[in-house]
Length: 140
Image 1 (tube, one colour):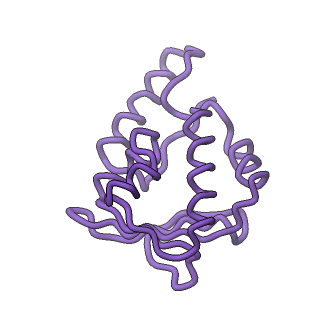
Image 2 (cartoon, rainbow, N blue to C red):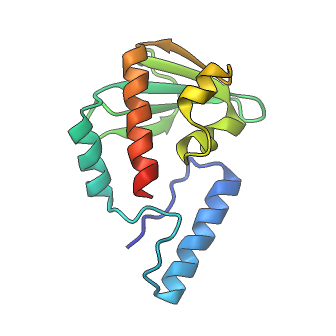
């Protein structure tokens, strides 16, 4: 069954994914929706196989001025609002570029080269995250 979108997504993306999810539930259709066709344990297994083992912080600027931490190192991994002084990589970007980067519309390398994305910290770890994102987008 498709995964339900998380609360941390921007409202416009969350609303669209939620509508797609509800429609697929009501249809009972097996059509591939925009939500992941993989189960959470399958996605987690893929991330574990890649062996990221890093903590990433995203500082979002603009209308939505906040920080989000993606912890792929401790426990089963987590994502939450806030800051982490021990983050291996800190990304700074406009809040409007956050969702496009995670759904594949904006490639992290392109964002970095066009100065839409600032990276501080462990550059190889940042590149590992791009590989994880690429696999995640392909699986959806």
